[in-house]
Length: 226
Length: 299
Image 1: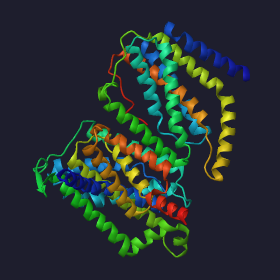
Image 2: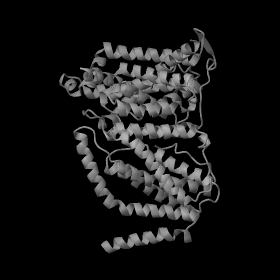
Image 3: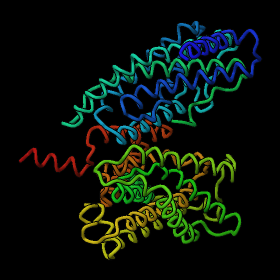
């Protein structure tokens, strides 16, 4: 039974890695979206699932990653450099927001995160350097779709792979935090948020790239979802 | 002086509308300890219902409030019996489930509106939409003045309801202590349903009035929801008077920033959302809570 499971995992791994060889573009897009969902879900799970703090403000971090990538790419920086940079910026922003926000618990935390995400969105739509409400577009051909696909798949696989270990330490930290909460205000689990954001944000960068390359649509702001 | 007068009048007009948006949230929060994320969806629905009444039956948007309010009261009561009663609990803080389920309701309402009215931007153009009146030398749009009077009368109505009637007394009792209210024979479930209905009716009224002031899409309402949050957080979550003061503070801040600072009006919303964040973190018990904390500290 166990070997069957392992074999299935290996088969699935080979399939997603070899997919660009024999799948058509629509199928690849679907796989890309799957990886996208896996990464975002894992990112959210770190904070929402293990640490028990529901944030509806991930779109802000996603947006920071996306804007970092597109702004740097317009200056002809290699996407593989912009990816970690976007992650870093989102992480820094999440610390700035997280330090005060983690004084709040439960729904109050959630509302605060909605507020932050909306404030970031409003800023992004009104500043000139972000292209206002029509957004920005990646320069054509700056990131090959196959490369993009592999980055996403690797990130998604990597993310799943690390989870059991992470789950334990985050759980522990969350428990400690809960204890802190009972006797007043809990202490920081900012690290988790940072990790979550980093994963989340790499994904944002990937998405922007794919959009601009394959269908040349103007870049969509993360308006639809917190 | 003229500019100050203009800012003050505009603040007052905006505060009336903001208070209407926030009262619904405050009443629901007070009775059910639930943060009604669906409020935005209900405001949007209010705007569309007003729009539908206006286009189908040529009903004046302000007259249609008479239909919208009871209709939304019924919607609210139904929502409570379908969803709300399963997520209410007696504790001091709202449950995460209630937040998520109401967020879901909001998404459903939003997509329902996309289905029925499509994503096109709609607006209501009446004969007085473009007209303005001069009050003490300040030009004010007729719709905003009408909105102010409509909100003021609905707020007065709510205050009378809460102060003078048995229902209001029961709502206040449940707000203060659900268990004690239950012990003294108040049917807390029915009161909660009524309060949810009242809150929803206020969302509908606010949406209907917003539709006369600006264009709307099914996505509309989010920024107003956050403003309403900001107001009730400033006002100390469950106090209706607090909500009025919070509305005044927010409106004064927005109008003052627009008039006296170079902050562009497109960033106005960002200011109120930042204020929400700061208010939640710095004084989660509202302005009143902050003041009473000071007082105890001084003592």
